[in-house]
Image 1 (cartoon, rainbow, N blue to C red):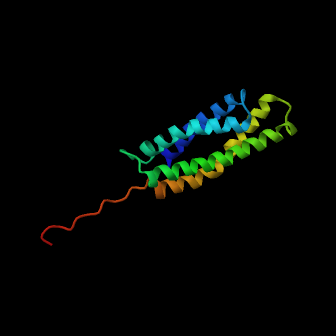
Image 2 (tube, rainbow, N blue to C red; image 1 turned 90 degrees about the vertical axis):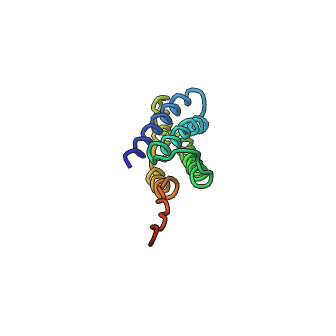
Image 3 (cartoon, rainbow, N blue to C red; image 1 turned 120 degrees about the horizontal axis):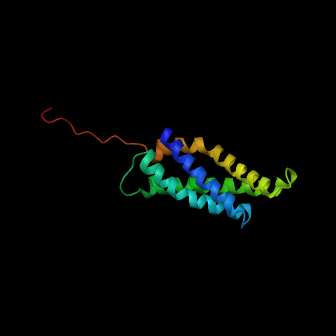
Length: 140
């Protein structure tokens, strides 16, 4: 849980920085897509190797497809939240900085909602350590 949380902190920092900077050039929707894509790659590898101790080749159906499916879910939900926040930020502030911060908080909140569920999916299904089958004792 601690390692998963630390990986999430790294991912959030990367995503939030990219999202904030990208809003200088693009809409909240486009900026969030870029931020999620950039932060998802280190998130996958850090979760797999460090949080769950997996090595070797990734398993397509047990690791890659579920992780990227959840990443896509996070992308869709956070992009909706960022777009909604950008559309309504002017009701709260007239400041560009304030509007950008509102977008960042909306995207962060969307990922926060998904965070706990993803932990259980990762821990129970994707990166769970399966005990090796034991061989019967000789001469038994």
